[in-house]
Image 1 (cartoon, rainbow, N blue to C red):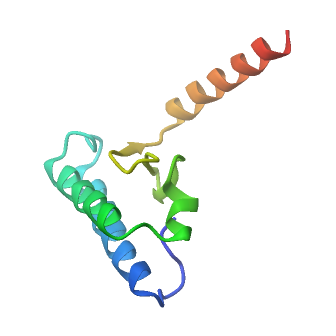
Image 2: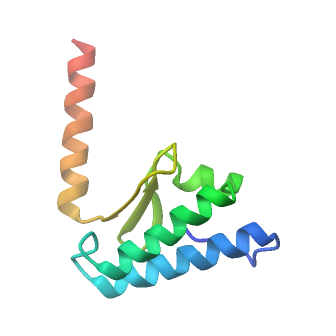
Image 3: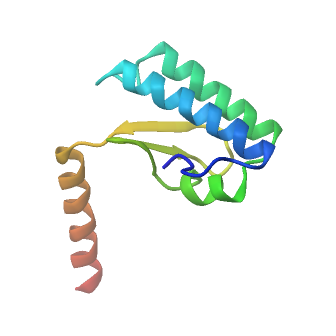
Length: 111
């Protein structure tokens, strides 16, 4: 989730601004988050920032190599080499299918 306290470090301020811009673009895009030109531009700005000024430890813990909450029903994931950003809208169907995949993997490993 976005920082809940007022950021104190310059790095936090710039990350928070970029995340807020990306979140608003994703909310405006509606269901077609991945196809929105505005979302793609905001994601590119975030990647450019992460490549030039390495991400803060808090950003790494929330979004690097894991899907961190960007907003209500939105998740953001940045891969480990900071070459791609994935934004997905989480719905009940997504959660159910992900749950089925993890259950079948656990069953397969237990046998």
